[in-house]
Each structure stands twice: as C-alpha cells, then as structure tokens.
Length: 139
Image (cartoon, rainbow, N blue to C red; front, side):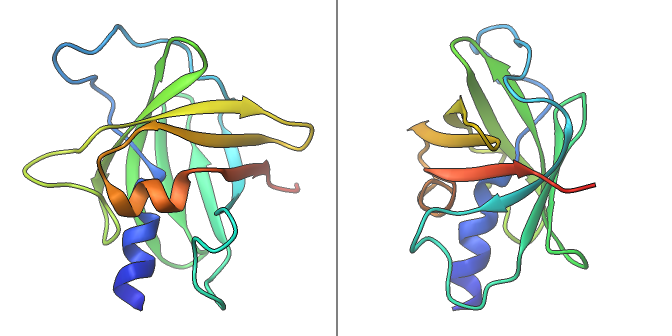
C-alpha cells in the first residue's frame, strides 16, 4: 500500500527545462506559494498524511507531508492555462531514464486551483493529480 501511495504522489512536480520540441516556457497559471494539496476522492488511501505543495517563483516544486519530501520537480508554464510536470527526484518521482512529462490544465476556483489531466503517461501521477485541488495555506 505504501508503494501505491508513493506512486500516487509522483505527479506533483516538474523540470525547469522544457524537453526538446516543447513550446517556449509561459508564465505559470498559478502564483508561487505554499498550498494544501488534496487528491480527488478515492485517489489516496485512508489515513494518508496531509500534503503541502511548495511552489517557488521559478517553478520549482516540493511536495512534503511536513517531515518527508516525497517529490521534487518544476512546473513549466504552457499556453492555455496548462502546466507541464517533470519530476526530478524523490521516492514518488515519476521517472524512467529521465523525467516523464505530464500536461495538466490549471483551473482557478473560488478557493484555489484544480488540476485536470490533459496528457500524462505516468499512471500513478495521473490518478493522483487529475482533479486534485491546491488551496493556499493559511498564514
């Protein structure tokens, strides 16, 4: 079960350099900051720790549960309110011989943002991140 949960966490991040053939980097459709990350219903096991997604202005992302870093990556901005996720490291990173790109549409909501899979060949990340929510952390 732990492996499945770590696999689900894999989709939370990306890389700073777009892969060859990718469109030029765009502005990220969500601001830098710390967000509470909530997966869609049924995407994480009962009793799973609360997760925080830390997004830096340069697109670097870390997903933690407060004490453990699960994945490190970057979000690359794409046209039409989309991001490309390329995991860099961590026990939940979705990688083969290199980062495996996933594309998500970012939708603004009254309380934060939702991520919706456009194209992601990484099954664990897609299951975890599709329809997930990012809510700005309380200060």
